[in-house]
Image (tube, rainbow, N blue to C red; front, side):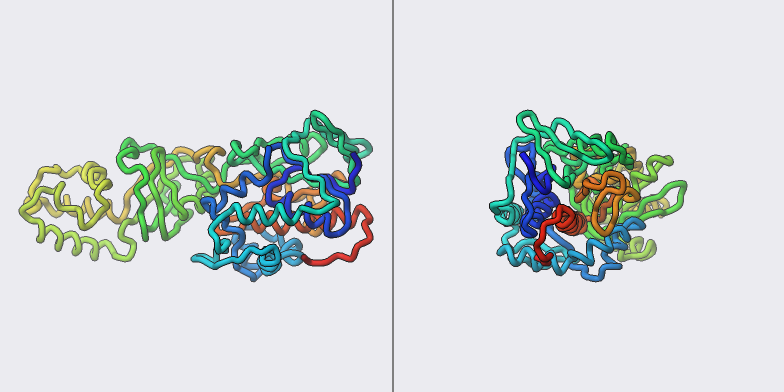
Length: 422
């Protein structure tokens, strides 16, 4: 079975790469071990598919990914945010813009995005093989010569590896792409879960499970030094804390957990100073001065968080408000402004949105996505050591690297078709 390009992995990067290869006139095999392509894509954006971020300034877009973001410059120039939006519009996907420049399909259905991509690869020169797990990759003289499944041997001029990372292993992400790349000489930056909840060492978590906290400030400390902070929404889980702002900080939290103890602090009243919160508590205490302490906090706190705060304040829950001392009130105000918890680890790959780590960027040509070690091998998507925050950045990595790799792999196979954008 001979092809110009063989692509392993039919996720977002693999699908756009295959369609692009076919557009340029090359014969492409797209291999997917699952029964259907795009299983993980269906889960993105809580099944709504946050398919891009509308930040069209390339420098600002790359800055959101940290120091490694500059690697994406060439791919963004070749197929950037505006190109992505035009591409999906051409496939019949109408989009809408939401808070944080997040781009979603108007239908709010990830399935619509997947179906559009599947339509994109419905071309005579594309062979989509599902339920086809690759068993081995054969190389000789520093080139890949073939790949083999249980039933077929596929020979191609060029190969693209789009097998993803380790997050959501139930969708088929088991890290096999890392093992193949390492076997043929590539360096793997150790993969770790990223954009994931943080596990806490707190006995009261079951009492507040699924409790959402809106308009709070979450800060993260090590050795009494703040290293990260976000304002927005957080949520307690049965084993820790999650929500958009926590998930965005999880990569940094994971890095610091390797160095030592990490403390997470929530300011439940970030719009008010300590003194202003104290005055607010005094007003409430005046209103409820004849009530017990445990019955006086409904205006200040979510109901399920009240028992936790009472316990942490060490104030007798049955104590009459009028009898509460200034020192006790100060402890309560301190908790409202600085509710501290000890982080112990990140939740695992099973719950991580993406994987950080992967194929070392030093071993990939950023202009072509071609391996610097194996000249007929290309990479795209989550398998490479590049990741961004929530908000559409990581799918844009897939679109930009997949489109670039597909274009370059097809042209390197000497298919004489003028390159077009989309």
